[in-house]
Image (tube, rainbow, N blue to C red):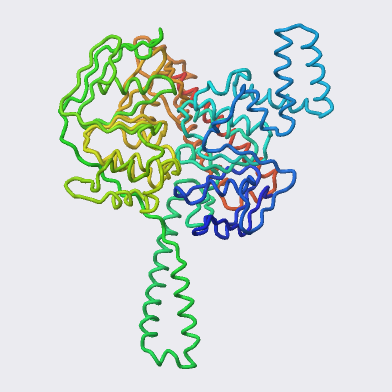
Length: 626
């Protein structure tokens, strides 16, 4: 049964319709991923559902008992108070009572005065009258589940922790539908994987916007795409969606070509003059007018970014050599006994929790920061271009044009001169948008502007610090291809697992106590190679089979029973993985959520049991191998 249904929704902000005749229904328990290019109206659709934007016309059917909560893309700047205060504020009008009670209990603990007890008693009475004790328990339960200290100051938290608190604020109302706008932005890998587990166990429905393909693959049971105002549903996984979408675009292109050919033929006919104005041909003339209007109303698909990197002079073969480097800050060891050699053309990924020291390591590798001890040898002829995730390089008050041009009218791209306006159009900035101030840009537009600046300067070393935030998937894949084919050296900090997997040649991982280890390959390669006692703050993937170092001298001989079990495990795991794929396929069927509720729960329980059995089998294999 649908918990919300949108019928023929239209929304326009003065230009082409952002949402045009949009229809969408969401069933209980669904996890729907909303895709679309930057600026197509994805966030607007979420705001329509949450009631923040009123549609120009159309119907929204929501049962009165259905509760909806949202996690917005940006953390509000004006939020203050304790974590308890922020989470409780999600409960609406009774939140002030809960906050007052929370603070009153702390005052009593610190001050045993009659006044403090009287104030606590007064608030308790008000809570009883308002029947709000259950709400206080809801807040405490969410704080416990999310491992949050209710007394901590919200303003002192990291970006990742703030988003965790805001998710708790959304969940405390126990919503039937949770709306998430780029929930993984600025989260480290540990927080992203923690969020995945929380949302997989969440019983309500999800509608979420994300650019993180690994996150989407793990969570979504259905994909809907917003393209040129129209919403299309794909009841399948992400890989199948890509195939079906390509087929749809190809069919659309063929239909448009056929239409344009017929229109051209009719235009030739109408120019014959008097023949076309005969009475018996008036219908054909009216049909032509209709075709002209239809062609004029056709909305072209948004083009792709045309990114090219200006090639700088080739650097020396050695980029940097690091020997036994240590870096301490405020009495804490950030980097300990670290050594590595980076050569021209290497693509190095850097992984670690927020605050581990990734930016510090970058500055040491670039010679911008001296280590506490150890030796750093830099190569020659280095030209560095730096992408800053905080976007501090942009002047908020200046225009897009001025931020890029820096007084230039033309930019030279690998020997060819290009006007600044034309260059910005390659990054999907129309001339009028190029004259807008940076403060008016969306997150995705700011990232594109930073990439345009970065690639306009000759460089042989690219430093990319979280370059994927806010980019739509098409632009992300183009950036991925560009980085992969770049002949210079790449230093990449990213929490996008699929991006790291697809572009880096080796990975530096922050593990416990300031240890930085080096692994060949990307994120999944590190999961397979790392020691089992490694503690980098990143959860191991369920399907990653560890490569255990085999030390025959110290390894105990297996009993007959254990040897038989380890021989049987690969076949058992293979069967469980096949069963898991079968369940996923069953849940991806278009009519899955139209079944009886008990049938849906039965399949969902089967999914959970199969995942647990698969995880237990991997764990047992690991134990026997060790």
